[in-house]
Amino acid sequence: MGLTMSLCRLVHPNARTFMTLLYILGNVADEAELTMSIDNAIIRALDPARISMVEITIPSSSFIEYNVSKELSVGLNLTSLVKSIPKPKKSERVTVAADEEFYEFILEGDIVKRYRFRSIEVSPTNVPELNLDFQVRALTLSSALRDVIKELEGSDSIEFIAESAESIVLKASDLNAQAKLSKSGGSLIELELKEPAKSVYDSDYLMKIADLLSISDVIELKYGSELPLSISFKLADETLIKYLLAPKA
Image 1 (cartoon, rainbow, N blue to C red):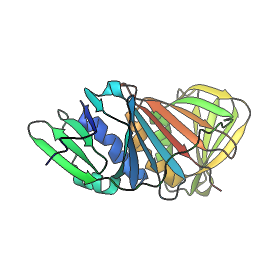
Image 2 (cartoon, rainbow, N blue to C red; image 1 turned 180 degrees about the horizontal axis):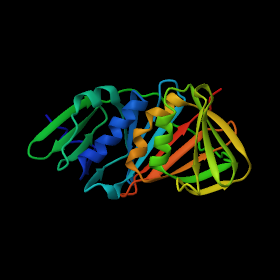
Image 3 (cartoon, helix red, strand yellow; image 1 turned 135 degrees about the horizontal axis):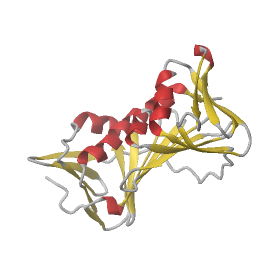
Image 4 (cartoon, rainbow, N blue to C red; image 1 turned 60 degrees about the vertical axis):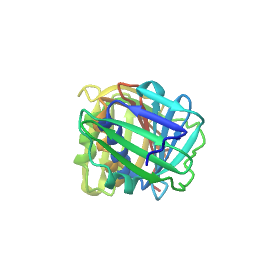
C-alpha cells in the first residue's frame, strides 16, 4: 500500500538521472540523509570512515511535481536501495514519497514499480560551514581529471601540486607516475593560485567518485596545503554536487 498521506511527494521527470546519483553515492557511503524542504531536496552522505562527504542539492524547479507540507528528513539505506531498484529505463520518471517512518521510490513508465523502505537512523551529516582559505581554485574538464585519476589507479595516494598559475600536477610517488592538468594542454580552463600548494589525498577515495565526474563537463576544484579537496559542479537543471575529501595524514 502506498504512502497516500505522505508529507512529501516529489516527481522527477528523468528516473535514470535521479537514480544514477544515488547509485554513484552508494559507491561512497552505506547510508545517506535526504532532507526535503520548501526550496530543494538535499542528499548528504558521509563515508563510514568519515573522511569524505557528498552533498547533492536538487532545486524544486528540477521536479515536475514538488509537494512538501513540512520539512522532512529520512535516512536512506543506500546498500539496500541500490540492490533493490534496477536501472530505470530512459523513458521512466521517478516519484519519491515519504512520511516520518517510511519512504517510497516509484518508477513509472509502461508499468509502475513501487519500492518501499523504512527510514533509518543516519549518523549526523551536518558539517559546519568551513571558511577555508583555499590556495588553489581551478576550473577543469571533468573528463581530464577522471582520466588522470584512473591512470593513477593502484597508487596508495595522489599528491596535488600547484606551483604556477599554468598547471596542476597529480603525482603518485609509489608508482613513479604523474600527470598534468594544464592551460596549454586544454584540460584547465581557469587556474587561480594565491600561493604554491601541495596536498596528498587517498587514491581509493578519488577512485570512488571517478564515475561521478562523468556526468558533468566542467568541475570546480579547490584545495590548499594540508586542506581538504573540494570538487563541485552543476548539472543542466541546476542540481549542485559537492564532494569534500580530507587530506591524508
